[in-house]
Length: 264
Image (tube, rainbow, N blue to C red):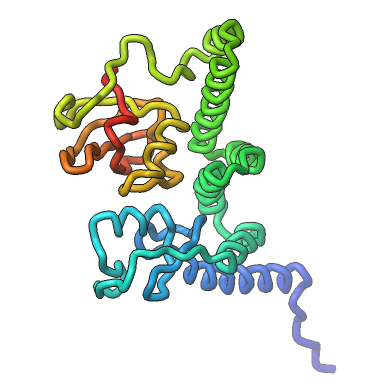
């Protein structure tokens, strides 16, 4: 009789379905990418005109503009509305196993910064450890900063309680956790520093507290500037801020109050 046509093997069918699922999820992921950063959104917010962005990216855009990055039209307001639905959807995409490993690792590192901002330190540690185990060197840097921030907090608590011996012991074990390194010169005005000069942003707690009440605002990416040297790009005498660039933060630029900075 006529031979039957060869049937696809179960392995072939499984690979085909996986390929199709990956393509579909990749198409879905495209809808959840920030049009400013082109990355999968870790901290999704919606602008007044209904478009979706990464919070840090759109906050920096709106710091000097009142228009939409997508349409160029003026926004009715600069209010940013969090999107729990998109946040859950992106987390499911990350957990699906169908996105590129490099993209997942990069997202985990940014998401951990958001978790730290929201006070979910243990969740952030677990996520950074996963990313580091998967080969993301940036995750190791964030872990180090997280441990330093905890050390600074413990030193501050010991000092507030009057237990100076405990504070000194912590400083000995974590010398880079000191809030202001010995010999550092506080900045009182933008006139105390030159363009191109390097300054050090103080501890996370100091910088975050100062900037949360400042018109420039605060976002999680600014944590990468805390405790390290950054280059002064611009000065604003009006609101007493410095625009800083930091190679550790991938060349990102943010504005900080002079009260957050010292000259090393």
